[in-house]
Amino acid sequence: MAAYGDRRMLSGMRVDIPHPRVAIDPDTGERYLPVPLRGTALLKTPTLNKGTAFSRREREEFDLVGMLPDHVSPIEEQLDRVANQIHYKVSDMDKNIYLNGLMDRNETLFYRFLIGNLEAMVPLIYTPTVATSCRHWSRIYRRARGVYVTPRDRGRIIDVLRCRPRAAKPIIVVTDNERILGIGDQGAGGMGIPIGKLALYAAAAGIHPTRCIPISLDVGTNNAELLADPLYVGYRQQRLRGEEYDDFIAEFVAAVQAVFPGALLHWEDFSNRTSFENLSLYRDSVLSFNDDIQGTAAMVVAGLMAATRHIGSKIADQRIVIVGAGSAGVGIRDQIATAMVDEGASRVDAEARIMTLDSRGLIVEGRPNLSRGKAQLALSLEAVKNWQIEDHPIGLLDVVRNARASVLIGVSGVPGVFTEEMIRRMALHAARPIIMPLSNPTSHAEVTPASAIEWTDGRAIVATGSPFPDVQYDDRVHRIGQANNVFIFPGIGLGVLTVGARRISDRMFLAGSKALAGAVTAEQVESGQLYPSISDVRATSAEVAKAVANQAVAEGLAAPVDNIEARIEEDMWYPEYLPYRAV
Ligand code: NAD
Image (cartoon, rainbow, N blue to C red; front, side, top):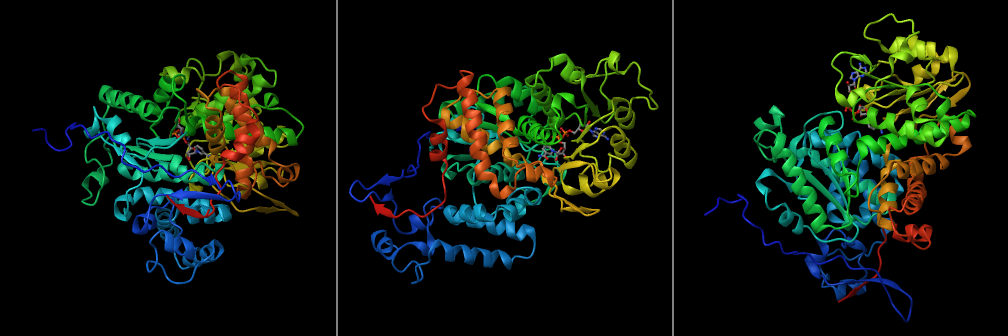
């Protein structure tokens, strides 16, 4: 007999009751939910539980009498209660645990609270707090959420996925946990990322929580601390590598297509190597994208569009230096080149205006031991032949000086690499230097906004990866826009799923960037902000979704759909308690 878990087939039967669809009473026009659950089962289903908000009629009809305190609370009262409880949590981690608990009890209330308090809550449910949550996952673990797939499931991943409740047009956020944010291999703790990202899909783009499927490919961990931790909840083995890993991913992707046809597969926080490999293997055959590479790039391009529009210039006129040639840097370079071509530049001219550096300096033709991937980013020798170079290999200061950089983008993860000398140099030839220290967390930023603004005599336009406070310089207050991917990926998801796109093209990302840049007002850019306020993210996501969906149809990647704009608005779920009727 096979040992438990050794590829024994699961029943493969769906065991769920599908989430009820909103119905409309033909006589009164009232919208309601036909609900098949009763009593405790209803109270324990987070997508349906209303807690103290169940009306007296519902309490009678659904066998809830005696299971709730007497008073019927409207949602506003429940929201006050949540605010009160959050207030008494001391640390951000306590608040994160509380909010996740609320999500597990009552998703309508959780999302309503989140949407009403985005600015304060997004940092608690996602970066930076989610990093701590992933790190301590095995210690704070409370309740199952999402799907864990391990090497024990090889040969039966399709059955594992079938155990998950069905959903129409789902979004899957998947990670293999190897490179979680800036904190590396977190093993099973990486699950905090898909859960957090999907909470943002639901809040920012109205993707109903039942359509959100977090998946951790728990292929083991090379994090020695976790392997030695008696409380570690994950698959306690070294990481699967090589052919075995590739086969595992291939089986997973095939299972997703079989079990969730038409799903959007969002790759997140894979290692640098596997993120590019998976993306290039599957981006043309599966509706999928990698947010670290493509979402980040689309968001940076949107910021550049807003900044250059404000200073009366074009992206194609800039001389752009990208510091860091990992997932973010490579994606940013490609998408900036696409944006320049869209503005009329040739691909060759566009690529010659973008200089990329890694930890060994400028990536330039002829640099020894350039990998195949990096060779594609290399600046030509011709472009540097007249440069006055002080350092070998060519360092950042040399690049800024010789290229007369007007845009500096930091995705190196290294704090402080944008020095005073570099930024003062930039300010000599750029009237409005555009400076984006995007590395997270806050302590890893390549420069602080306050320094960048001071060293350019208040002329720099700054956007950061982590939230930074406003900067007062002379008589002006500079607002610091946060280049948060939440402005892009939820809208992409909403757009592609609304029209049923087959895949996501670079031009669809470009359309998303234009829509995002269009959502930033002249006043916001004037005050220094390159991105909208997070409190406006739902309206922004709707605009991004419309642009992406229209582009998909224009490129023939989705069948034409009548009135895309209205369909997108209709597809956006807003958390509210509808009356329930028993079925
Ligand atoms: P990564 O590990 O894939 O890449 C980091 C790159 O930086 C590597 O190419 C490395 O060689 C290079 N590097 C290291 N030291 C350097 C130095 N001194 N000078 C120049 N290059 C150097 O990581 P990633 O996914 O590309 O992310 C990089 C950073 O960008 C992280 O801190 C991440 O938090 C941040 N990021 C921010 C956003 C955002 O703001 N929305 C999005 C994505 C990534």
